[in-house]
Length: 373
Ligand SMILES: Cc1ncc(C[n+]2csc(CCOP(=O)(O)OP(=O)(O)O)c2C)c(N)n1
Ligand SMILES: [Mg+2]
Picture 1 (spheres, rainbow, N blue to C red):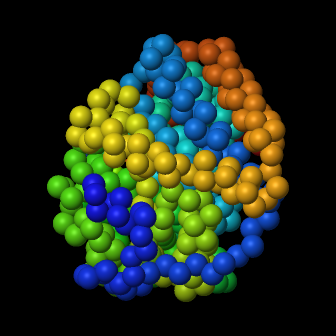
Picture 2 (cartoon, protein in one colour):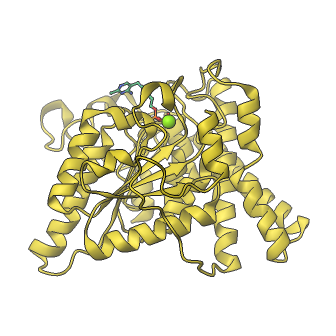
């Protein structure tokens, strides 16, 4: 992992074997209100995850639970860099993306709890956050499975804009994946088709350096420069420092604007770190505590809070008031999720097929969709 540390702390101009297409964001003035909202979103995600860990330990959450702590700047910066109706698809570490996209934490928490009030009526759980209203198309548990979906979403938007509506393609799809998904065949097929068909999709690799307990240097060729994967498909790439939300936003904004304009796919290597284990049952024996502490000193929330204090006239009280607001919101979400009923047994036979027949008839949309209508 030493190489990753090195890369996060020093710029990487034209690395040997790389594409040389480094991301050079233009400085953009970001107003204080926007920065506050990003800080709030990152705090909201972190508090949500902390409460998920507690709830998991108290057996309120069953099955898998992969928390996003440490990676908050990626979901927040990337979603801020695109339009609210640009489609997003992601893997199983998905709570942060759902919240950053605008899902109310109560529906997200109820889904974690397996309750009927959840975004998928409690039948999807931690790995399957889905929110049609906010154009979030999952939450997928099979490593790499979301990458052909990302290409497909981009195909669908382009087809709708250009073939059906006879206009210019105007949407960009964000397809998030972990560094572990780089070795999946589905990912390479998706990259090939995206390159071939000029699909406006950005493959956003949340490169946290580990695939479960396997470090990228042990499991992935060209792990020190994964942009090399994009070269084979004629796809432009960029490297983005993922522990700084402003850098994520600026880097992604440049890539997304270009993708929207040119209708060409892109690949971004976003350098980040997950502070916790792969899932709740991971004792993290494959890495040192020193390494974890080193990344914790680059914490994206603390970085932005420091910037607010040093450069935007924020006081300690401003920060504490925001913290309280977020804690109250998540506490209410936990209470709401806890009070939400279990799905009735009859729900087992609903939402199984699109065409409803026989015992599968009679489904109803989740409460979230009715409330958002
Ligand atoms: C096709 C497939 N193979 C194996 C697994 C088991 N598995 C679950 S997560 C994971 C590691 C993925 O790591 P990465 O993509 O880097 O995501 P991260 O956990 O770091 O966010 C593996 C191998 C799976 N879910 N799907
Ligand atoms: Mg990973």
